[in-house]
Picture 1 (cartoon, protein in one colour):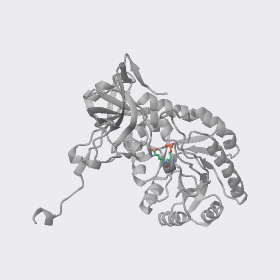
Picture 2 (cartoon, helix red, strand yellow):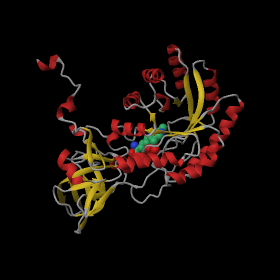
Picture 3 (cartoon, helix red, strand yellow):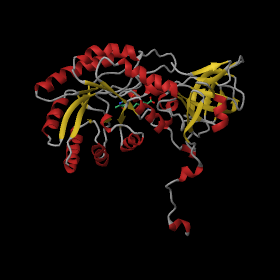
Picture 4 (cartoon, helix red, strand yellow):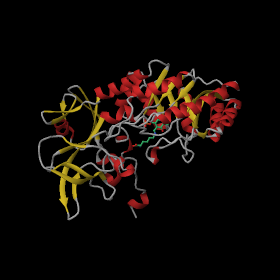
Length: 420
Ligand code: LLP
């Protein structure tokens, strides 16, 4: 459910015609609907109201400050994965006591910053990391609250690049080795065991892997408690999928109702780390058609957005619906929708049926709110695009389009090259 809708053949975001935003900010740009963001967050949060819980929005999906701030005002915590994300979270006013820090490669400076700001817990992913965190915490005279990210070896049945809970993945500590890691953690003087964590992967369209993981974790938690360890938090990670094309992922209520029975048996505060399900369908990428061309085999529609702006199609072969901003009855063609970048992998869609485009017309690349802007780069020296949030009939630019100066910021030419 989102608020990008056609009114008399013209695509709107809430009460604003998208064409008008393009006139104001140029193209391409990311566009987010405030009302959709709020709705998605609230629906997800309310689905778990029966149990004590905390929704830590996984900010890697979309870390624009305005979006973070919005979720903070709705009571969200944050799931972070780097010092940079901690910085953004705090800048957006997030309560450190609602921040969880995941990731296989936390640096000591990042640990230090997180400890100093007093985050809720570190989701630790290796025994070496436990040792390092213990040392850093000791130096600061602070006890580091930890949970161990357990890898339950469950196939999340999603794209291999976004599966994380299997033995061949780098993430977490194997469930069979987890008790040993927990023992180590409870012996280290500057760590405090507070929880257990797992994250299975992303874009899961089935609840079964979650239920299976919970069953495996339950047995482990019982053993740990028998050994005197206190497990207050159960962090189930993120991963709930969305509809890009014809996927039928469970609604958050269905997801919750399928896992709540298992969760209640843990007697823990539940932590969830949703990313995509909150922001994915709350954002689109608006692009303009530049040219069309064809050969005997193919037709190409060349647009001004490219793989540097939205990498998901090139990287994962992901499907994003492409809709004309001006809908009318006209001939349809089958074409590759491609960008201006010098790579054959630079496409937004392949062999896609779309209305025969007119040069200059606007297309909306749908479901681009998650892992869209946050994965964008400056490849081919393309300034990163603007981000806009619409609330009702208001247009807010929440990130300026970069300019050429931004492209070279921080670069310098050594003297010996200036006067050779
Ligand atoms: N928690 C942890 C520890 C994670 O690694 C992730 C995502 C999440 C939560 C949020 O998962 P979500 O609810 O968004 O599925 N770039 C890929 C997705 C990578 C996901 C990485 N981790 C894509 O565009 O599909």
